[in-house]
Amino acid sequence: MKIYLYGTIPKQDAESWDPQGLKADIDGERAEVELLVHQGVGFLYSRVDLGGKLKATRKNVQAHSETLGELLDLTSTLAPVSFGAIVDDLKAVKKISSENKEILEDTLEKINHKVEYGVKTYWDPDVVAREIGETDRKVQKLKKKVQKGKVGDQYQATVEVGELIDDKIETKKEELRNTMLEYLTPVSDEWTSNEIFDERMAANLAFLLDRSSQDDFDKAMESLGKSQPGYLTFKFSGPWPPFNFVDLELR
Amino acid sequence: MLIVDDLLKGLFVDVPVKITKEVLKEIQRQVDAELGNYYSPEGVQNELRKLQVSLETGEISREEYDKREEELLDVLESLRSLNEETQKG
Image (cartoon, rainbow over all chains, first blue to last red; front, side, top):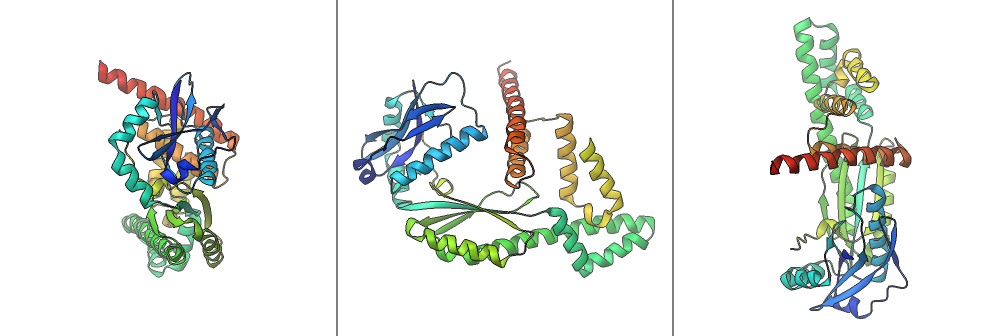
């Protein structure tokens, strides 16, 4: 049996810990969530008997997230560890605890009573490029050059149009991010921008907020959605344990 | 190669709007994906993230996602084993 870790909780949560029959799903197996308190920090874990490696499939990651969501309801503060943190035994957990005591305490203090929300914005890059092509004068001028110019000029103009559209798309992303921040920073404590790894993605932000601000964040998100054009799709998720605001490298 | 053909056609029919750096990168990505050319674990991981976007934007179903994910994870595992063996050998 190995130890599958979910995260750490502060002393006060550990003292009143009640799993309320919670069963986690790990690679299709049901497992109890248990608590180990060591040097004033609580470690939430399950005992697992995995045949092979635990794959980071959507199903497994989603099951992990769901368990964390339920643990978030049972605690006031939860510092998560990434999906798939497995150690040999409880002795290893105690070793981690001893060697990282200060960073664990600092982290729990920093995120005390806080949760994370993620906001991703998607768009159709063709629609955005077309809109720029139809409304931007510089682009329109170059387009005419492409259509009517000499062959050599056409090529040059085509490259210029492409670069210009790329620049305009980047500007649009920046403007969108600023608008999102205008709505969402007054109702949150911190924010961070995650990588935009797909051309269909226009923004990828995460916000840290106090649990008491959740309703305000919901309302701000609704106002933001209403204020924006229809070609933007906002994917709003949370509350999550603060993954993006915890930098725990436990060894 | 249907998707790639469509994209290439788009380049010449609707040149001013279509030829952006992003589109060129996308063509390269799709050619690699269609030919199964995943040169590195990072390339496969990138493909997995794009698949996630396709699921979130509703372009593919969960079933389609799970099927493709399984294929990509197998490729990833093979690449990692290969890398380990190369490093050992």
